[in-house]
Image (tube, rainbow, N blue to C red):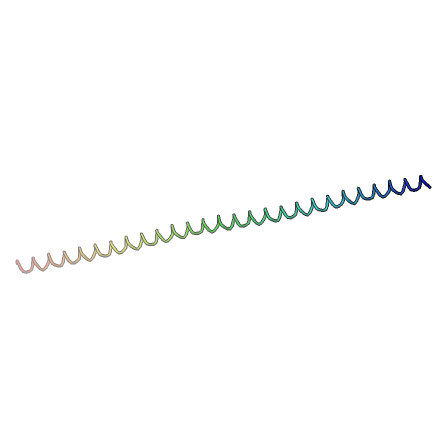
Length: 98
């Protein structure tokens, strides 16, 4: 009887250890999944920020170029008008002097 009781205790102890080990593994696996998921989210968020920042730079650069081009056209147009006006005045002055 005593031997049976000892065997039962040994089996019970072994089962408890096995359950404890299995639970630790489950917890460890779950923690690893949680950490992995959190890291993936962090990486995704960081990538989204990087893409957003890069897009903002690209848009800003494009807008600056567009504004620069528009300003150059405006200046060119204004200069052409000024030259035209000056030539017309010179032509009128020559007519009057002739």
